[in-house]
Length: 164
Image (cartoon, rainbow, N blue to C red; front, side):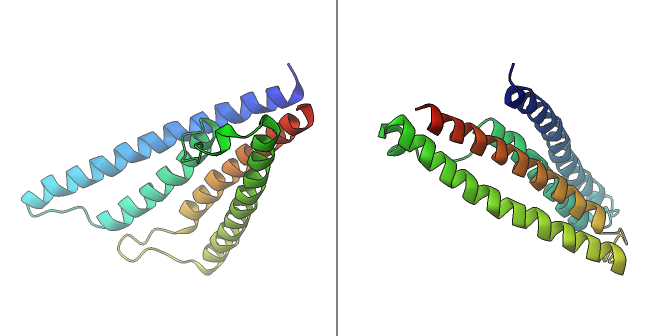
């Protein structure tokens, strides 16, 4: 087993773990919504429902992205590209992978800078008075993991280009 394969196995495992956390977060969002609806009937709604659902939802999305990319479950334009020669397909995959990687590196970097700024300034939520930076760092974790997955995809595409 090559070094790239070993690295890929570890990345896939960690991405799967993040995906399970994302699944739990979706269940948490549903439970919060349902609990709030039921408690509203008794005149006792959950305080900060909007904040709770927003933060849990952001974690669900950012933690699900890496595994979605590992499984290639995102939307791709296959109609035209699948008819091209293998080397051209690998070239297009490399190019789009580099663009995607660049975008998500910037997102992870700027999210980290923003989270650090929130931490130092002590920004809190309005209703619950929760600090915002842990949720932002969670998004940094998810997008950083996506960057690693995208980097691995670029390496695989480059290897296909060289082989063909």
